[in-house]
Image (cartoon, rainbow, N blue to C red; front, side, top):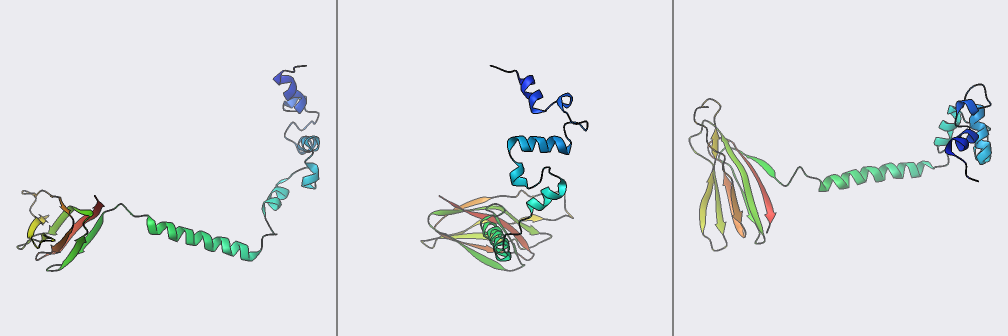
Length: 187
């Protein structure tokens, strides 16, 4: 015999008019009747649920303190391990002090992309990027763009360059600090 959804819902006590309890369908006696009907009162230990019982059931006094401490340590180590692999992109930014320099080695299966090479103005000597290939051939591939806030009438373009490996790239600052942004990519 097929019953309609309304009949089944009424027999299950889902309508307030079908509730025999004057408090309505959400009262503790209706909940305890429902729990008794589906056989959950044996697991609860009480005939009805209240907030205190729910909170006590969420606490786990059976878990030893060593296990809780181990879990916290494992969570902290996981965060540190994952943070080691997460970077803010592949680009590296570096400040080169006035009259300073550094070298970037580009292996044979990689290339170097320099996106930004700027220098604080006013400057008289510009910074340079020189590349030397494996045969010893060397050349200047990029000079700095001077950024001078006092001279906004003549703005310079910010150029970028790609250097293929194997090569050695030397970045030399001018007479003021320089800022370079680069990344190594794979062929």
